[in-house]
Length: 193
Image 1 (tube, rainbow, N blue to C red):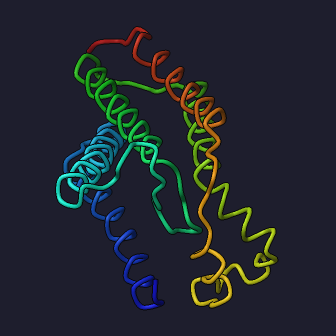
Image 2: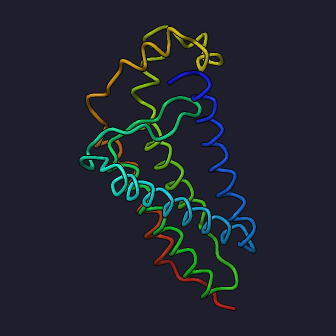
Image 3: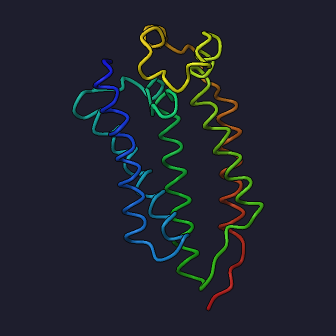
């Protein structure tokens, strides 16, 4: 990918996140509603991204096909199934928060649930960043991290790299932590107004 196209891709990714945040802030009335709309829109966008790729390009050939998910701050990669699982989980979290928000005047996700959610999300993020972060460290590119987007040697290395394995057990552990936080939140009693 040429530098100009890469810069456009960075901007496209940032624009997508800004758009999702803008929708959430435009529609939501409080933090939890905004979070719900953001997660719902992000999850639906991600699932339909893959649906339309399949319809239009007949890609991916399977849910275990590797994909580049994001480029910021480094390349995120995984089999397609992993972001689809994350998208479904985001939608479930959003729907649970919407449901709780309708039944109660005030909701709180709870400190321990936030800890589980954030821990799980960070673990999943590690699985996405693992391969290319390892390339950066092993290849001695870490001191040049801030200029990697223009580093020709780095681009040669990453363009030739195809990951062989995904950290499914680590991913599953992160997903379990997130689902545990969701279950604890969904089945906790709320105070109605």
